[in-house]
Length: 115
Length: 140
View 1 (cartoon, rainbow over the protein chains, first blue to last red):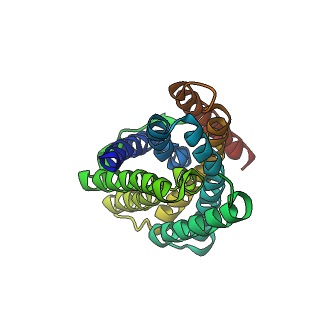
View 2 (view 1 turned 120 degrees about the horizontal axis):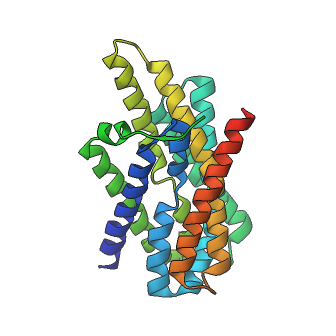
């Protein structure tokens, strides 16, 4: 049941930010919403209500590293498209790979073992 | 560079494309919960900054730009990739704002009511994102 609630709430919040992003021109401004705290808002609200604010605070700390990885992934996909002429779909796929690798490298180097 | 509201972007997006974003976003949020249950908040927290909107939106921007050019009888492939790259640039700037949201959450969630922190964090994100975009545009 909790997972279903997370799925619905998360889907709605992500969709809302995606729609808001679609409203704006120029494209670079709309791109800001690609890094909107959509998953975070849904997850932190649910985590705080279920597991407490301290738990949500710990999640936020890790989110810092995830945000660094997100920035690097977006920048890398921008460079792939601008400099190599790579299309959006493979660039987006690369960005996911970069996010995973960098996020977990940062976690391993800075937060592993912490509670 | 003036920011303006353009409903064309919303109208061009199909119901299927909205559904994909809903399912993807919902799946990531649900996965973060499962990961938290399995490995705790330190690992789960990484996924709060997972690029949930970015990949789908990037491909949509490219496709919509290509379709717009095709309607005018133009090729548009290069312009479409440039538009997608502009979107990615914006997301990179927005990630800096996302980092400030995360710091605010880390510092204040355990001390201040959750709703206040999340609302304030979202305002902070919007402010920093706008400022970052403005600075990047001015320095280009």
